[in-house]
Length: 317
Image 1 (cartoon, rainbow, N blue to C red):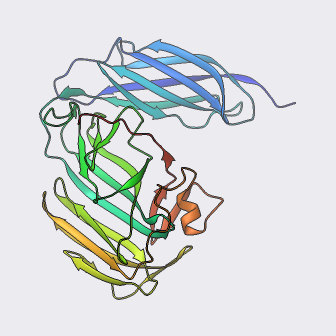
Image 2: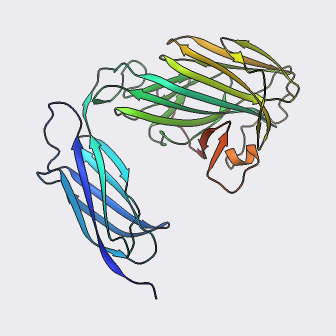
Image 3: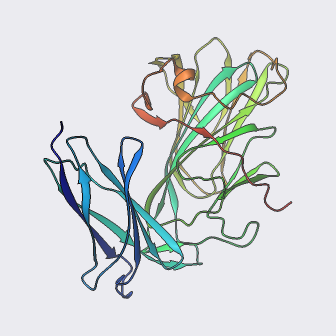
């Protein structure tokens, strides 16, 4: 029988907005997982020292991790604890919290990467981008088009089969009039977003424009090296293709794109779309690249997490 013990988790909640009050009294919800099973649920409050403590956590030799959710004002902040077991019964985790603002910070996109692959439905594009909020307040969004939208991205004409991963939920993701809206607050620091869509091929061509909503420091686009021709705008094509588990890929890149600038690639000679419907919801990035046993794939040293189907809200018309 495995040895058993009880453990203790300390959650250090730190106020990161200058001059803001202490997070004392904030509600902390903790779910303890052993594999996929929840073995304990706890709700505690932050004390005057900024600490919330959970005791009597049932432990064996099997690893346990905690999902910690701190409710600060109207915003939830999350963190994952380190591993605990009967041999390591104590753990600490820090959760920074921030005050909010409706005023847009001078946010930017340090990195935006796209991978395009051929499917029977058309060209499937997987995007991953990191945005940076340099302020010390969580931005709660604009009201111009969608109340609470912090990320607004215009997708290529005819884009269908939208799926999403990190940074989105079914409640926060809206898509209409060819535009993706994310209604989640943008906290300080880096936030990553991942999504995918399909563009139909017409007359052997597919056009992939990338519109920068704000300054994009690095943009990289990967397309198959399959004999098709490329026509580019504001993108440089690397001299050598890169070998991936899904085949050879051509790399295109740009740096220092200002907000509003469009960089694009047109793939010429692609097979026409043979199925008019959007792709099946069970596709995954590893299937595209020939990887079936990992949840993260590397393409030229760039990590992409698996995406999951999300039915976006229609939003305003």
